[in-house]
Image (cartoon, rainbow, N blue to C red):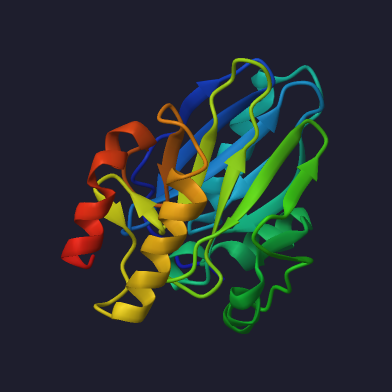
Amino acid sequence: MSKTSPTIGSIKLLYDLPQVTIRTRSVSEMDNNVYLITSKTTGSQVLIDAADEPDAIMELLASAADDTPCDLDLVSLITTHEHWDHIRALADIVDRTQVPTSAGAPDADAIEEATGVTAKVRLKHGDKAQFPGIELDVIGLRGHTPGSVALVYVPNGDEPTIIFSGDSLFPGGVGNTWNDPERFSSLIDDVSQRVFNKYDDDTVVLPGHGGSTVLGTERPHVEQWRERGW
């Protein structure tokens, strides 16, 4: 059961795209971003990181009712990584909605141990998470946790590419690896090869905490991050 704490962020409509909307709400004392993708053509919804405050998350789900003429249908809850601040409302939301969940394979057991929720799908790098009207590519970004995943909204036509990066990539650097050189090397290598080497400068990054960025803003600094070691 998630603890009760004041909701610190109002619901925000980040993107109103031809095929989907993307909404977010910040919850908990950790300023966690909960993201919601809603298909305009099917009503399907994908929730990313049930971090905390289940009532606030349910309000987020309902807030997309005007985004589509279809009935809303939460089809998946995807957890970007195992850390406690990203999973405190997971069991509660699953209990209320009966939604199937997914997580990176190496983190799935820890999430189940902490929440009692078994991931229906254990995600691997290169997987495609496909739902009615929504398609997400899965990027494994090892280092912050062994099974951290980023999710890439696959654009349709002129829509932007959008990466939900969890705690692996932020404005100004990669996620915390607790001064462990091996974990940092793993994360910076994955971010370099699997994100910056693949996606263009206009790609949007929506992290697990705080504000967004685009790859073009961060790209000139990646080698500086590598040299500083965090």
